[in-house]
Length: 327
Image 1 (cartoon, helix red, strand yellow):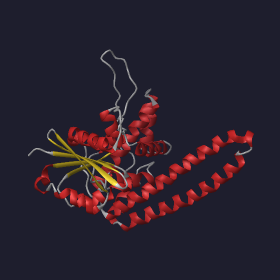
Image 2 (image 1 turned 180 degrees about the vertical axis):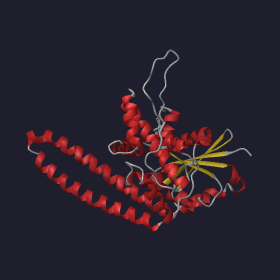
Image 3 (image 1 turned 90 degrees about the horizontal axis):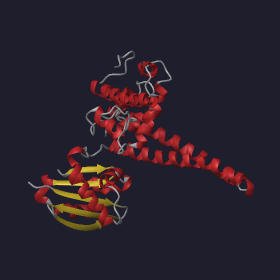
Image 4 (image 1 turned 30 degrees about the horizontal axis):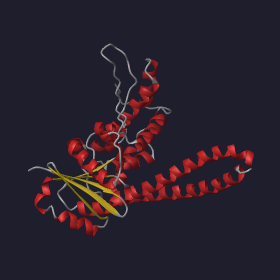
């Protein structure tokens, strides 16, 4: 059966849809509601197993699509907008209809290489919402702290102290909200036996704290979206590509341009923490640096090793053991 590829550009109020059936293209625009989505999918009752649908991950605005699609046998993909942008390259002109077409063409080309979307449990849905809210406030706080530094440049016009005082109050309010959201996340995880067990195992790895444990659980959909550590390492952009040309010209190690930058940042913080305390990862770091390896290349390798250890602990249902032998 020839597959039908559907690309959906998601916005708060509406869904722009491109349907690619062979060489034929058709377009629809519907409301972003459960009822409208149900009416749309009814037209494909005879092709249930041949539908490949993709949408960008927009956070809150995908929820009505998820509610309907989790009951169908369609192959559904939720993709990072950066993946589509990098795959297609620079394209002149932009509108919702064009974006839907780009998504349809992208998924036709790449669906065999991407992980399928699976419906989350209620606990995972709540976890992802709480994490999104926390991350939003963390970014706001970071921006405000940067502004505090910039405002010192306004000293000559007498505006620096007034604005900096307002920012301090806002930063303090954000700190309280971040703490409250973190308490809610921890309480949510404790209420789910499987998630609590996963979080506890992950946190036995040196350098790995609560934030990385939350992210690994949510990014992997409770370790159901990714079934091996290498795929996760590619997703996070930490698989080291140390290469050289045929004439022995050495280039800097590179990682995927499709990397999840947020996850990569937290993995980097975990790696930096791990090499500060006595454990096998610190031993590995010191040995490789003493051999003359580039420090950042070694840190990247440690990020990769942390991912592999996380998956090993989850798959083997065990906890971290010190003095592991590292190649």
